[in-house]
Length: 161
Image 1 (spheres, one colour):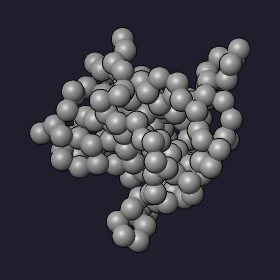
Image 2 (image 1 turned 180 degrees about the horizontal axis):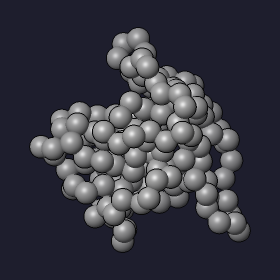
Image 3 (image 1 turned 180 degrees about the vertical axis):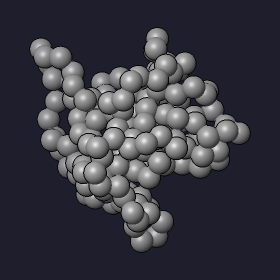
């Protein structure tokens, strides 16, 4: 497992699952288990997918991304949530690019609260076409998806790495 960077001082020690099995919000200062901040030297990824631009609805409480690994081996995946203000360069939002190792046939996620203004983009980089991303918007800090605010794996667009 990759060594955690000094910037990642607090690691989630409990499973981010709320009552009923729904994922829950974690503070920006926490990163998922098996994750590191992507500030280390860039790993060359074969595949890169983007949600394209999207807006948060007025009642958004948090933005959640999830990854499922249907490959037979564990996969390193880098996920970056960007703010894309009009007329300015896009920039990564906290906690920054996360590199997470997802074991075979398992899923992981991260949910954070972001300002409800401007455009957003989620970029997923991986080395397997059997890694499937998902993005959803929650009205609060638990895994209840706002209807119509899910971005499924089939909606992500593959871009050049």
